[in-house]
Image (cartoon, rainbow, N blue to C red; front, side, top):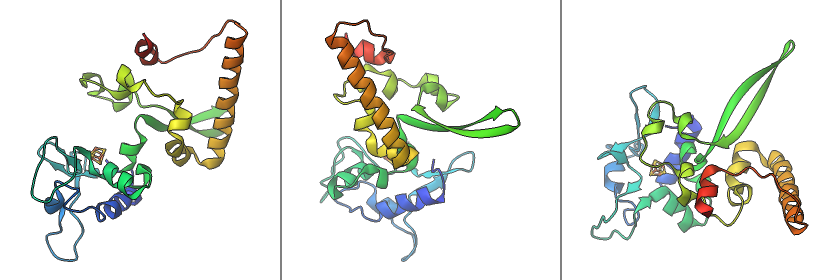
Length: 208
Ligand code: SF4
C-alpha cells in the first residue's frame, strides 16, 4: 500500500527507469494508450492504492527462475535491483512500506495536563503491528534468527532509512547516544563489570 500520492509518484518515476532486460513484467506494465501512465498500481479491497498484483505477487517481483529472450534480470524486487544498478539508495526507488520494513513509524498523542503532545515512535515492525493475519505468517524477518546476523548495529546499517524516517538532526542525536552506549558497554566489558543489556530474543537465539 502506498503511504500517499507522493509515494506512488516516486515509485512511478523509478518504474519508468526499468528496462525489459531487468524487469519480468515490463510488458504488462506498459500503458494501454501511448503517453499514458505505467500500469503499476491498483486499489485493494479497502480502496487503498498499492502496487499491482500479478499471479499472486507484486508486479515488481521478478520470479525465481524466470527466463526470456533478452532478460538478464534476477530474482527479487526489481526496484531494489534498480537502486543497486544506479548506485542510489532503495529509499529512493521502492514504495515507503517496502523500504521502511523492518522499521515502523507510528504516531501517538500524549496528554500533559491541558496539552496534547504528538509523539513519533520508531521501532520494530512486529507481527502484532500487521493486525489481523500477522501471527499467521510462515516466517517474519525480525522474528527469525536469519535476520540477526548483521555485523553492524541497526542505527548504522539502516542509517539512510532512519534519517528518512526521523530527519537528519534527530538521527544525529540518536547516533550520538548509541555511540555512547556502545562505548559504555565496551568499557564495562573491558573492566569485567556486570552488564545489563537488553537484546532482541531472535538476536540471542542467533548467537547460540
Ligand atoms: S519490495 Fe515492495 S515493490 Fe519490491 S517486490 Fe516487494 S512488494 Fe513489490
